Length: 223
Length: 301
Image 1 (spheres, one colour):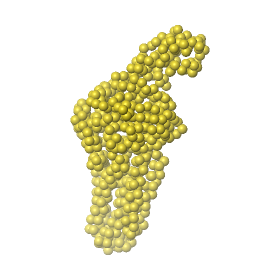
Image 2: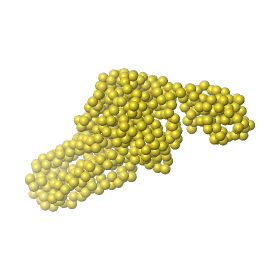
Image 3: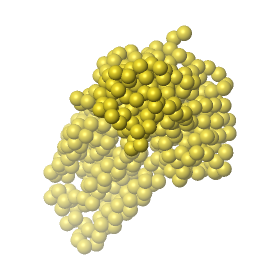
Image 4: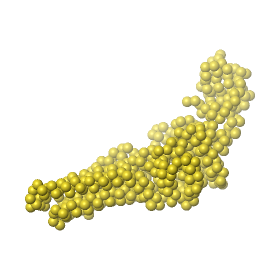
């Protein structure tokens, strides 16, 4: 069953996802060029000092890219479902609504995670080329919350789009913006390091919260 | 025999506006029922409740013995739903959409699906979004029939279809129903299509008043009597006559005549009109087709 849902989602988001993939690859290429440029314009010692001691972020261009990817994947995945309430077609399938909802989320999160992991892997490779191991670690700890912001944006987008009540939809949108903003409120590079594990908790809660709008959509009470 | 659909004391409202209060009916297996009514009487609402997408304010609505808003997946597998407008996943192609649905249904009949969509003469990679409404209806019907459901709930299957596709839809449906003990509950705005298709009709009126009858019975018993010149001289208004004569279901007032619609015989009608000084000796029976009778029953507006 999950293979069938996976297939449907693949048919739906394959092209937009490929465009996002190209966008992310392009962005990583830009970060590689920009980082190299830092070393052309200044002595390596100066760049290292600015990045490792003064907290300059050499990959700042990436900060909002995962957020954008998360929002777009949610839109590409759930707008076609909510247009004309086509999600009813999936919710009538002979499986539980929770299974349908979580399968859709699993597919969307997988699509997002591939992009996020690719971003982090390429960022590590670019950073390792110019900086020490310490520099790579700081960069990863800095960029990881950004990618979690993207996951929060994806889940928040799903939470908002699947909600049938427009008032609750506005509440969900604000909630999603608040949670995603939490991950982007990154004072110094690597400052989220000690609490990385805790940052996954809001995502797990958001994932479970998505069952509520789905059940409201499936068994709507009006009147 | 346990009814396939059983509605008991169903009550539903949107805010303070009640759509039904105490709606009751049941549908036995193996029958084709048409739900007829004017726009806004709650046909789609009733279908949504039956499909489990709307929770009624009160009352019970059971499908295969289970509450419609709490159907188990096994029961849902026995029900084929056609949503108003032939809703389908438009980003998929003819082949992809079949591959998506097939694993969910153990009795999936791939051949039936392809037999139906092959009539369209389209390639298997043709996207649903690039189809006309008629072509899409054929794909949706193919998916429904491949599922081999015991109950089909069809919400306004005729919307957007021209006469040819409507006929094709009904012919395919009839062929499918001939295979065995299948039950259909449908709504449509094209009354003539019902004539040779449904076994029974349910007329739904505002407020949830309903009449369940066979089409034959309805056509035989529901009559239109024309009163040339209306009720000139009697001084009675349309509403006064309707109040005084419960036997009259509806009166349509035209410039040159009044049409009185009733289940009563001419004698009974004349008898009930006599105290109102309505010239009942001028009543003439007017032959009606099903659409005329439907409009006579429900009113023009």
